[in-house]
Image 1 (cartoon, rainbow, N blue to C red):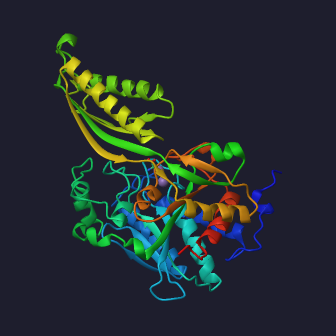
Image 2 (image 1 turned 30 degrees about the vertical axis):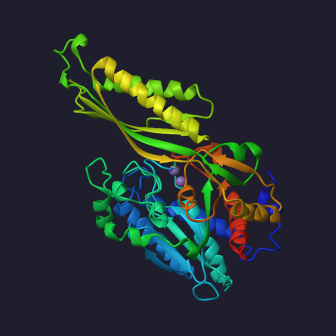
Image 3 (image 1 turned 120 degrees about the horizontal axis):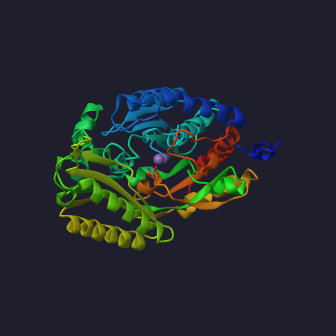
Length: 427
Ligand code: HGY
Ligand code: MN
Ligand code: MN
C-alpha cells in the first residue's frame, strides 16, 4: 500500500491535539455536510447573499461556537469566529477562506480552508491552550464573484477596498450588490466601518486546494504558494439588430452572436499564442434568446490571467482592440466594461516561511508553487502579510463536482496549520 505521508509525520512537537487523522476525518465530513446548502438541487451552487449561503454560514457558526469562539458578521455578511488570546486586546491572526461557490462547484474550494481553520481552533480549545494572540476564523461571503462578476467582495470589505462602484454592481436580475447586502441582513452604509485596522491583525493564512496538478505530480500532500496570479475580468456587450430568422437575408444581418463567437475564438487564439496566458469566456447571454430570432445582443464575461501584470494588461488591450475591430466589420456595437483588474501578488516571505518551517517540522518536503487561481489572500495582502498552504487535489480538478482531496493530506495540512498559527510572531 502506498506509504501515507501521514504515517511518517513527526508530530512530536504538535502544539495541539495529535490525532490529526481523526480531525481530518471531521473536516472531510463537514465539507460534505455543507453539500446540502445549495441554491440548486442536484448540484452545488452557493452564491453571495443567497439563503443557501446563509444556511451554510449558520452551520459553520455552530462549529465555531463549539470550538470556543464568539461569532459575528460584518456589514456585507462575512462570518467571523474569534478565539481570544491569553491577554485582552491582543492582535489577531486571521485564518480562513470563503464559503461561496461557483456554479456546479466542488465541495472543497473555500470550505476546506474555513473548516481546517475551525479545526485548528477546536484543537486549541480542546487542549485548553490560549496563545499570546487571538485567532480569528474568516468565512468570506463572496470570493468567487459569480453573482456580481467582481471577485473578493467579501475580503475587500475587510481591507477597505470596496467602493460605490462595487455596491452598484448588478446581478443577472438587475439586483445591486447594495440591495443584496440588505437582503442578506447586512448594511451597505456600514461597509466602510467594516474595514479592519491592519494594526489589529498579525497576518492572514489560508489553506486551499491547489486546483492544479503540481502537488500530485510531485507526490506531495501540501505546498506553499509563492505568488497568486493577476487577473482581469471584463463584461463585454455586442449589440446588433434582432430580426426574423426566416426573412432577414444573411447579407443584411447584424447578428450579435456571430460577432461574439468571433471574439470568443479570437480570445482563445490570442491567449494560446502567449505562453502563460489563459483567457476564458465562461458566461454568455443571448437576447432576445429565441430560436427563430436573429440575436440582437450578447453579453459575455472575459476572464484573462497571466503571471506577469504588464503582459496581462497588454493582452487585455489587444483583446479590446480585437472586439472593436470585429464590431466595426459587422456594424455591431461593442461595450467593454472592465469589472476588475487584480495584480499578481507575491506571498509574504515571513508568513510563507512559517508554513515552510511547519512543513519541515513534520518531515514533509517543502515545495513552493504559484497559484493560477485567485484567492482572498490576494485581497488581504493589501493590508496584512498573507500566505497560503495548498493541499493536493485529485487530478488538479476544481470548479467541478469531481473536486476531491484525501483525508491524509488534510491531516498533514492540519499539522502544518497547528504549528503555523502558534506564536510568537515577529515584532
Ligand atoms: O477564479 C478564481 O481564480 C477563484 O476561484 N475565485
Ligand atoms: Mn477558492
Ligand atoms: Mn474558486
